[in-house]
Length: 149
Image (tube, rainbow, N blue to C red):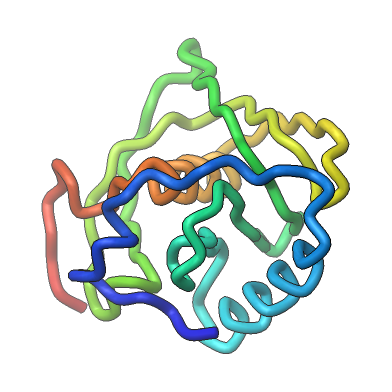
């Protein structure tokens, strides 16, 4: 598994839902975690970032880790937004100033197709939003202030 880089059409194409049962799901997730961790600075990786056009991502915030399939994300608007530096494994060397919701609720499914719900804030909320953007075919460089590392 290799990370797909900026310019590949798969990064700008919305993904399709995962159907269950998904026999290869555990192997795909394991491979994605290995690829993400090999980068040294990755906290999330969407399936389309490794060329798999399915609605699934893995994450490891340092506080929690997991797999989310077919996510739907709802911002918790009373907490508002904040702007932080954000990078992307598919765009090495680029850091953007990206405004994101401080807190979000995310619903989806685990690799067995069982429902899961998370309330995330701060870094975890940022990860969820970034990865959901990938699944929708959006990159973090859309509507941002860019700067090179």
